[in-house]
Each structure stands twice: as structure tokens, then as C-alpha cells.
Length: 176
Image (cartoon, rainbow, N blue to C red):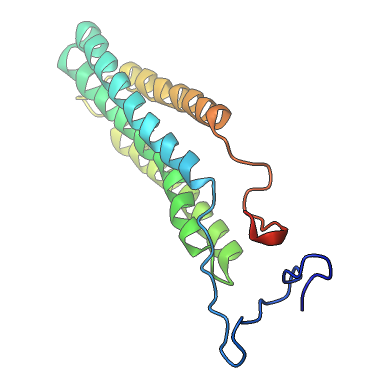
């Protein structure tokens, strides 16, 4: 069935094959336009983490010796792991965009990532609580620097991204 004005297939109707008797080849769904944003978040987050690790290790070393260096590196690593789990889970979930179960898979994968972060944080907090080779102040400050820095990275990447308001729709005439 076609649109009367343009001759294009109507919205919501399958496109009939141009050759009678030959079924139309389904077009695989395009990757969501948000994938580039999450890849940028991971890239800039890694650059930020390297900076925080260097500054934290230097300051931790000055104020608390090798224990401060270790604490700063562990705090930075924790921040990177926790903050990248969400972006990675969304990128992984977006691979199922063509599936009939996409919405359920998407939210299940993202929720699973959040639960993983929660459990991992509790386990690390209990394990690292009274370790003699950890300076809790340096660990805390490097973790907070990672969290605040990642929020800034998220804000900058989203502001600079050029994702259209309606990103994954098909316009009449086959334009995208």
C-alpha cells in the first residue's frame, strides 16, 4: 500500500518488493544515534581518569606517601569502573535494537548494570574499609573527583553532541 501523493510505502505498512513474487529484503535497523555520544563519554572519561590518577597520585604521595598513591589510584579506578558500566551497558543493549524484545532487553541490561555497580560498591566498601594500605581520605577524594569529573564530561559531551530530537525515525521519501 502506498501514500497517494508520493507513491511511497505508507507508514506502518511493509514495503512490497519491486519485483512481483520476490519478497522484499528487510533492511537491518540503523544503530541509534546516541551510540556516538556514549562512545565519546567513554573516551573523554578515560582521559579524565588518567588526569585524576596522575594528580591524585602526586597529591596522595605528597600528603600520605605510598599509601596515598595507592589510595588515589584505587579511588580513580573505582570511579572509572562505576561510571563506565552505565555507558557500556547502554552500548551493549543498543545492539539488540532490531529485536522484538528490544525494550525489555534494554532496560534489563541497564538495570543489571546499575545493580552490578551497587553490589560492587558495597563489596569494595566492606573489603577496603579497614585496610592498612588505604588512606580513606585520599580514596574518598579521588573517588569524588572522578564522580564530579564524569558529570562534567557527560554534560560537555551531551551539549556538544548533535543528536536530533527525533533521531531514529524514517521520513517520507526514504530520507533519514
